[in-house]
Image (cartoon, rainbow, N blue to C red; front, side):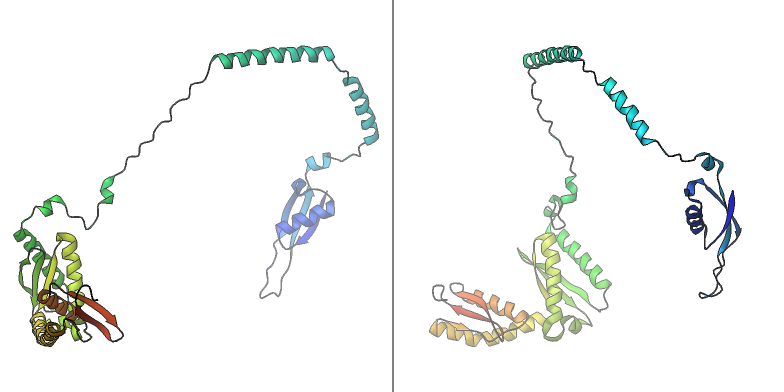
Length: 296
């Protein structure tokens, strides 16, 4: 038995044929006769034509109504025959189970289980990955000052060699036990200083972090004559502040900016080692106060 069905695709043909023939889609065989036409922009669409036939296995499987009443009667009769309690067999089985359980319990009591110690898990950790970038190794600590200066000179030359500034290291020496003196000079020295010394501060901060982290030293940076000029001008200004401290025992500076705060703080602490010299903040900027330790 076969019929012809029009549908937009093969899946729709299966569903439509199964509903018309009243069977499952598994028992159907569909052969495309004419492919569907999609059309253009929703126009000229046309469904495909399919020939549907039922498989031979599906025709053999005819559903017959079941006689539920007869089957129920037969099942009830069988259940009555089966339900003959065997009391003796159940008693014997229970006795066997009791004897087995008593034997097993006696064996468990006679052989106590010894707790096994838990195995300690050991982790193989490569501690080399935790080495700090800023850690000074033993070889570097044992290096002399000359070797240290050679390495710093090579690093500075490499740094400024790739920059756009015409600048070079004109002097490099040991300033004191904890400080290295670095002097830069060149045609672009003024550009390296910047307006109000903002580039000077940035370069000084950069070089300090590198030298301090690698060699545990501070730096004293000079670009052309910038630091020297700043120190001389600050010394001239602080002369009046020093006179005031010597007369009344206390004084404060005007608001200072940039590297001037550090220069003034260093000069005043060297001049008054027994007094409190500290930096204070205000709306106009940072300033330095000088007074007695117990009268801040």
